[in-house]
Length: 546
Ligand code: SF4
Image 1 (cartoon, rainbow, N blue to C red):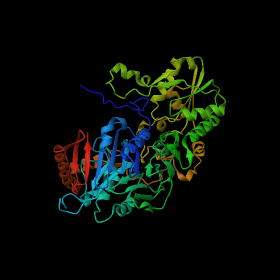
Image 2: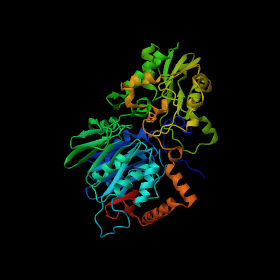
Image 3: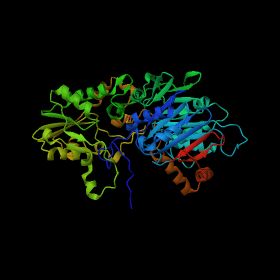
Image 4: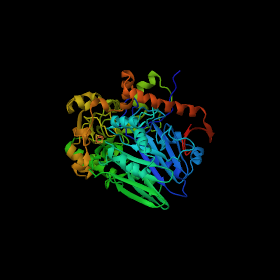
């Protein structure tokens, strides 16, 4: 009998997800502080960036331990788990998968010891253990997989770009992790905001384009790095600065060191300003809430309409709806109430419940909308099903006209740098013009903010922004179609297995590692009521699995 997964989601219609972010990362170096709890609260603030899995790694100076599982941060960790994660360095991750399947093995932080398996046993040199968390998506994953296979450091249990980077960092036991990072980071292509650690040091690195945000904060007795400034606020850290595109930071008992591994070519993600980042975060000096209000103002100037009430699609449409109302002079009010606590499959929905769809998440305020001409402001249209359902709901509640205003230009191109919109074929704006979309969703009128209007609202120069999902100009070169995409590594493995070629032999040798891992799983010892899974060759690390 099918069972619900018990997971909550912020999606209005879980069958039709909106843009999915590619993870939140957090790191802390703070002797004397409860670093696992700080990381928990940091991840809590970043939960909107990924809801599939969560994990925390800690080091007490002699060993690195990772605890991770599928689910929301509050579902993965409880008081006793956090209490068992002791140390002075921690990193954390909230995952949405953009490369690799959504499974436990691909949850992060990833963990690798520097001593390659099979070359050193208990008598060998002590290994350094690396834990790594990634926000973004690499585009030369296939090339990295080849390099990892050639070095013989692959791990067939994971199918993520992040695991490949961790393997490459761990493949240089002759170098410090910092030196290995300065060799590996310049070879990566795509979007990456990394936080990683070994027993003694916290690291943070950002791709040369700085596609995804990453900020540095200061605690009274330590340092914090996080995807967004709101996570620094949450743990009482002051914002120091953004980690620069192409910069590697190392933080340890000697203080903070900065190195450059590539020249900066800033191309920050424009969609962070529209939807992805929290409104109480700041990116490149621009407060996101103020930016969204400005987008709403631009929308009102570009697409005015006679109406009685401006309402947002809660909550992501709220600041833009406020801006639209301010600029147009049309009163702002609530027309839809969101029930934030309905689970995706908290109970396995029957067909009858499934048909309720969006009604499980949104309820119209009938008294507010009845007899009125409504402007409803939303952040984006991906497939159009959500907007179609909302418009129908508003009309059934008595709205006489429904005008839709969207605070981003039409999304016509897929993102390869860490946001999962939908396939190109699923994007409604890809096959229809604005009037076709209006008819498809059943609105009386439809207006998207223009790309120049959106860019102006961010207060960033156009040249410093990635706009590819709107205009198709990809700032980081993409490889051929067949070596890109969410399941690129699974695809390569399948091809190799089918052809019985060179790669399959390498994967064969990798799978012996997988076997080794699974045997370890079977002999795990108990740690705080959880199964302790793996001990590295250096005896330094452990993976805790619920
Ligand atoms: S393609 Fe769009 S979502 Fe992806 S990084 Fe560029 S602006 Fe952001």
